[in-house]
Amino acid sequence: MPLVTTTEMFKKAYDGGYAIGAFNVNNMEIVQGITEAAAEESAPLILQVSAGARKYAKHVYLIKLVEAALEDTHLPIALHLDHGPDFETCKSCIDGGFSSVMIDGSSLPFADNIAETKKVVEYAHAHGVVVEGELGQLAGVEDDVNVEHHSYTDPGQVQEFVEKTGVDSLAIAIGTSHGAYKFKPGQKPQLRFDILEEIKVRLPGFPIVLHGASSVIPELVEKINKYGGNMPDAIGIPEDMLRQAAQGAVCKINIDSDLRLAMTASLREHMALNPADFDPRQYLKPARAAIKDMVQRKITNVLGCSGKA
Ligand code: G3H
Ligand code: 13P
Ligand code: ZN
Image (cartoon, rainbow, N blue to C red; front, side):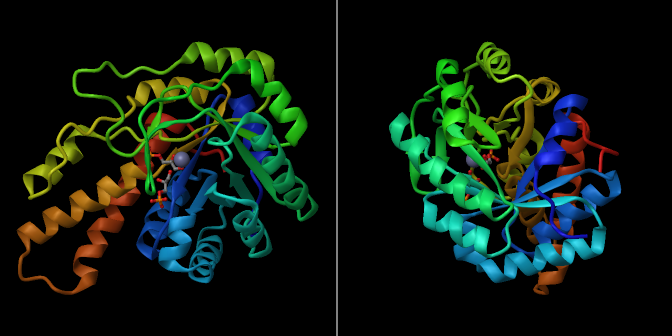
């Protein structure tokens, strides 16, 4: 089965009150762990690649890994560029076989974001590729950029943005954030569901995307700290809040940090308990299984997309 775009996936997800998981991939074990879980759950899937991942693993290796996953699982899989920083990067992924790209113009002034996004949409649509845009800015750490405060999406801007750019989906800021430290210690986790609802009214039927949606499971953080890690005060978005968003207009939920934490906890535990091991297969096998468990947990607790492939 060839790669699919997200068009059909999002339509079904919107109407069915569930969301598709968009998981970041950087190497073979991560691709395998994610796709094994999705195959077992018969869940539609978005594999996404950041500019950093392309730099780390090289475009061609990631494409070939995803091609192998398609052949192995026969699942509907979209391959998406996460946080495309500019037109050139988006073009390179469109020319290089991706079925979906994000152009992240969220830090630009509104008019410039529209202009940059429209340029990507025109090129992408001419090549059968779909585009995610972003309005509003998440707090948190993303590559080398550390944004201190949320700039919540202004619902008054969403219609104009979608109409003028022609984007296929829209990432919004309602209080999620990138990384493992999403709330300050003692701060009550909360999301602006009022903004999400208003956007749904202004863009009926239109797929909304949530970035920064890892839940930072406390048991995993405890395990990391128990085996020599140092992640004090790591806090994520409660799973029930994400589930609520998935039942509404949110059709795509981005998860990276939870995969990193699952893999790190497994590796730290394995190394601590098996200090003589030096065969990478011995420690990467449980790490891959930990990724699989995490994705299955997301499909069940957050996304609600089991059996929807
Ligand atoms: O939102 C960003 C993703 O977690 C990807 O992170 O740029 O370090 O690959 P990265
Ligand atoms: P997390 O850091 O919460 O996993 O968010 C990932 C993300 O938004 C990727 O684009
Ligand atoms: Zn993101």
